[in-house]
Length: 197
Image 1 (cartoon, rainbow, N blue to C red):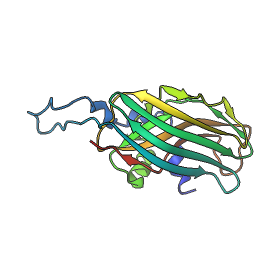
Image 2 (image 1 turned 120 degrees about the vertical axis):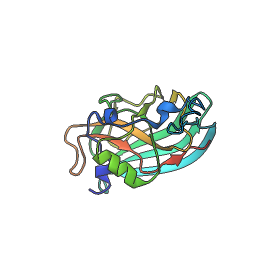
Image 3 (image 1 turned 90 degrees about the vertical axis):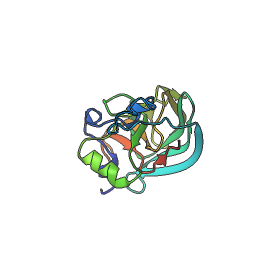
Image 4 (image 1 turned 60 degrees about the vertical axis):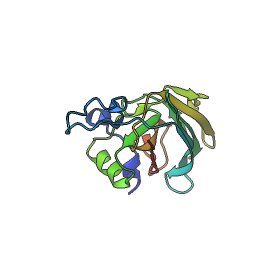
């Protein structure tokens, strides 16, 4: 269960305890007189092919999460993502089912997996930069053997230098899930991408 404890997040309210790197993305140079206040710089427009593929569950009973591409523009961001249900039960796709359960991005200080593990363990995960559009919308229930591919996006600047991870959630099992799978899960990618200035 080593990797699972990092990515299956059941700590409701974790986003309230976390701080958001991106909250200062629009502050540029206002605090030059205060050496203790570091200014954040918004990431420049950039597009990257990622081809991330991550699995949850034992062999033969896996959910596969994919992130194909990330694009940051002058006004927001877009990610091409997918979910394949290789399990024997359906999964209700319920964005915003919990405070920290939505599709979107999380910004971390580093891409180090230990930072993700530590912040998950201490309930200090950064807030999810929630997607405001999912196109096409995912089905209400992703049946066994089905897949969904789509694009998630939102407006707003992202902080240059931050490491971006993609969040999928909340997924809720329809019926009893196979052993080793949680009934409710939120997936945060192990992969990350460092945003450029």
